[in-house]
Image (cartoon, rainbow, N blue to C red):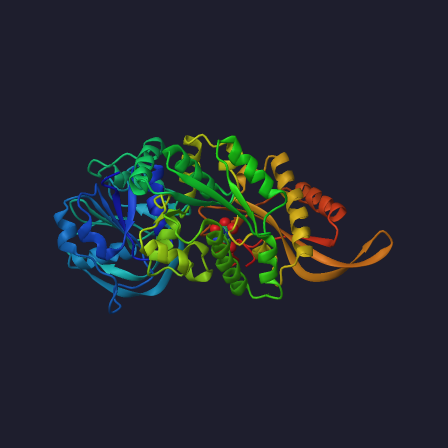
Length: 504
Ligand code: XMP
C-alpha cells in the first residue's frame, strides 16, 4: 500500500493514537521519525505530533521545513508540532506561566475547515507549558476560556492546534481530525480486506521458497499470523511451546483451535524446564529474562539452529515503541520478541513480521477476514511470560494451580454473563501473602487472590471495569468455595498508569 498520511513522531505518548484514528476513518496512515521526513514522497497530508520536549530546549527535535513546504499538502501541527510550525513561520515561543495540562474548553473563533461544525465549549485535552507569539498574518481559529489561542492557521493548508484531538477526552477530536483529513490530497483507502491481499502478497514475496517456522501461543496475534501464513500457502511449521505457565487446559484447546482451521501444530512440553529454571527466583525482571531466554532455547532446540525464516507476530505498537526515542514504554518491561538470538536472525534477514503495520483491533479484523472463529479473534491478550507475571514473587506449581482454577471460574463467568467481550483483559493474580480466615469451623491460613478486569485501547492506558457487585460476589463465592488454598478475594480498582495491567 502506498502514500500513507504521514504522522511525524515527536515522542508524545499519544502519537500512535493519531495513526489509529486516521485508519479508523478508512485512510492509510503511518508514523515516521522527524529525520525520515525527506524520504516521504507523496503523502496526502502530514501531521506533526506532540512531544515531551520544549522547542526552546537546545537540540529539540526539528524538521526540514523547506521540504515540508515543497510537498504542497495540508499540514497539521499538534501541540509540539504547532509550536514548531509557529517558529518556522517566524513567530516565537515563550515559556508559559503555568503548565496547562488536562481539560479545557474550546471556543472556535472563526469558521473555516478545521473547526467546521465544532460546538462552542466542547472539552479539549491540553498538554503544554509554552505559549506561542504568532507572526503577523496568523489567523486565530480558536481559543480556550483564558483567551489563549489553541487553533492557528499560518498559511494556506498550514494548521496548528494546542490540544490532542486523538484522545477520547477531546470531545470533538474526531470531528476536527476528520475536518483536516477532508482536505488531504487523494488519501489512500484503508480497508482490511484489501490489506489482507497486500499482506498475502508481502508474505509470498518475503518468503519465496524458503521454509518458515512460526511460534504459536493461542493468542490472537500468533493465531492470525498462522492463518495468514496458511492462507499465503507458504511452507510453514507451527510450533507451540508449553512453558507450564499457561491457563487451565490451554495446550489442548490451542491444538483443537488450530485443527479447526486446518493447521496442525507441534506442541513441545517444556513445563518442567521452565519451572525448574524459575525455582527460587522472585525478581520480576529476572523472571522475565529466564522465561524469555528459555523460550528461545527450547524453541531453537526443537526447530534446529538453521531456521531459514522465523515468523513473528510483532504488532505496530511494538515496532513504534522500540523505535520512538521519547518512549519509555520499551524499557518498563523486557519484551521477549526482541531478545538477542532473534535480533541476530533479524539482522541476517531471517525474520518476517507481517503484522508489523497493524494495531491489535486491526489484527482482529484481519483474523475475521481470514476466517478465524470469533472466540479466537475475540480472545483477551495473554502475556508471553504467562501466569508467571500474575504470580508475584516465586512461581511454584501450587500457586499456579490456584491461579489456573480461579482464572477459569472468572473467565467462564465473564463469558456466561456477557461481560467477556466488553473487557480488554481479565484475570486472577495470586497475592503472595497468606492471611487468616475460617473454613468450616477451622482457622485457615491461605493466599489472597486479586481479580483484575480492564478496558483499554492497545494497552497503553487502562481503566478498571465497573463489573456489577452481584457478578463480583458470585465470582468470589465460587472461587472461595471451589479453589483450595484461597480464603480471600479482592477486586483491583487501579488504573494504568500508574498500575500496569499485569502484576509484573
Ligand atoms: P502491562 O502489564 O505492561 O501490559 O500494562 C500491557 C499488555 O501487554 C501484555 N504483556 C505482554 N505481552 N509479552 C507479551 O506478549 C510480554 O512479555 C508481556 N507483558 C505484558 C499484558 O498482558 C497487557 O495486555
